[in-house]
Length: 138
Image 1 (cartoon, one colour):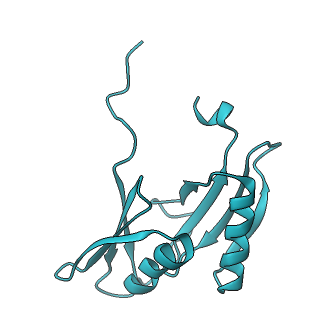
Image 2 (image 1 turned 90 degrees about the vertical axis):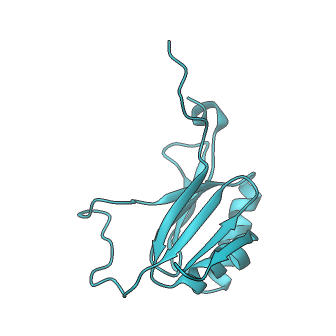
Image 3 (image 1 turned 180 degrees about the horizontal axis):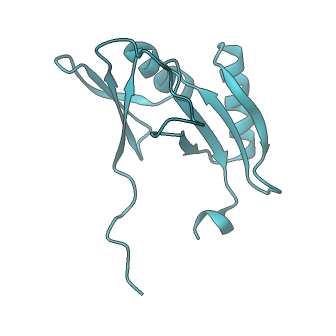
């Protein structure tokens, strides 16, 4: 059996239409840190200490918003949380700050994992998951 050549995720690059607002979502809602900026591109790099997300600004507002059912592209990005309590606390924080929620924390399938889905300010779907580690590592 071959060993995978990759070793996890280094970073995720997202093109956003609302650069400052998207960066603020990661920084103020998720307590991430701004790593750096590139004013020429422009881009803002944010990190939770384990993964970096590069946010690149679009030059123009997109003509059509992404529709996960018909467009090819990023369906969503998912970030793991440490506990069910963290998932519920994050949900409350997002709701209290007017973040658009697709669905509240619920069982993933029959459980025991739970997840929720929201939209960051540029409209990218963001999932937060408290996984069942037995199935997460398969």
